[in-house]
Amino acid sequence: MLKPLGDSTCLVQLGDRIAPAVNRRVHALAALIEASPLPGVIETVPAYAALLVHYDPLVTNYASVADWVLGLAERVAIDATRAPRRIQVPVRYGGESGPDLGAVAASTGLSPAEVVRLHTETEYTVYMMGFTPGFPYLGRLDPRLVVPRLETPRTLVKAGTVAIAGEQTGIYPLDSPGGWRLIGRTSLRLFDPASETPFLFAPGDLVRFVAEAVDDA
Amino acid sequence: MTLEVLAADGLVTVQDLGRRGWGRFGVPRSGPMDAFALRAANALAGNPPEAAALEIGLGDAAFRSTQDCLIAVTGAGYALSSYVWSFPLWVSLRVRGGWTIRLTKSDGGMWAYLAVAGGIETEPALGSRSTHLRGGLGKRIEAGDRLPVGPTALDAQFLAARTLPEAFRPAYTQSPLIEVIPGPQTDRFTAEGMKIFLNGCYGLSPASDRMGYRLSGPPIEHSGSADLLSEGMAMGSIQVPASGQPIVMMADCPTTGGYPKIAGVVSADLPVLAQCVPGQAQIRFRATTVEAAQARWRAMVNGLYTGVEKL
Image (cartoon, rainbow over all chains, first blue to last red; front, side):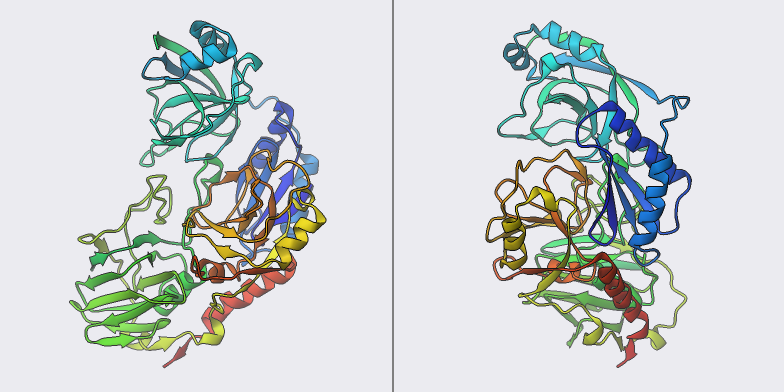
């Protein structure tokens, strides 16, 4: 369940697939660790089914961190009373904002309007963040919208672009390369390093997309 | 006081010990490629370990201080000169205001660290001065930039002409034996694959950068799929994609990754690996334990305080 990754981090494995219950345990353990930090423990990085714990081996050691994390992992309970944050994301779908909407519709056998309906119907969980600062991995996507990544990633995807790939949907916070299918764009700013709260999302948040407009391809 | 940048032909960035606490939002640590050399430069310049310094790589660079100051340059693969003299690295020096501080690329390494007493005091972003270019945190330092240097109460006369002897530095070499802690995904590789990794000799691809060092050598066999549910990773994590050619994640390592990790490089050997030169280095790996690795790193960092001596 807990293994060293190098000499300054260890990985707590709580499952091996994308599942809301497993992911909630990951976030609950991260919250427990943050609420009662052991000296020398620096931060945690939650993912779908695993939590990475960074520590400073000049301050503590692997055995101490392992004992402490395993102790907390035994006590971790999902606090149903702690309501997650809910965030609405306005999106302009299709057209120049979401150039792959037509192709996604064609390959799924749906109309563009149905793709937008299915994408906006689900309330997603921020399972994890990664790839670039502020990029939320959101799931689970309606199975009817599952499409593969692009074979050749685009060299430039504009900040705010909403995209799908596999069972996931996400939003590019920065202009960056990207291999997901682009279906729309939001005007919300996901990452502002100068702000006191630099990130719009945090792992564990609940997210819903709202269609502002659907443009023709 | 200001440090003026006269030339920055390669990649010059400001780095401190790294950005902490933002990993869960997907923000990489960044920080130095050779963390020991940065710590040593700060120790020699009389700075605290967390002070920011300049990382210089991939080309020559030159600077000029507006006032007399104490500096130290550490790392490998560079030669240092100032005014009309050449100086060794890993030494603290008093430099007059207006003298040029020149770093010239040479053999045997990749990265040099220039610490100035008082520390480089560029504007921090997300609690750190470390530069992460892809994330828009900090910037690439260019000729014409003027970098603020913090105040120092220390006596430069007393701190100058000190060195960290070679015995206390990382054993930089282009044919290193790098210690790793196997795992966490040893079960994702065949027994033969593990053996190949620990017995093989790997070169360093020119496609290597601050994000990752791509190795080329005998391919490592997976026991099943090379896809892993994305999970956290860190500097030193060795990912093995389907090609079987390992990638060692370096300072700008993304917070998460989706390839099985065969091992993690120990802190004490990351500096040696960081200074490996693409096309030249012949790298081998050896397994160790997390306890032994942590003891080695503590001893190395202690050496910064016990090992420094007057020239």
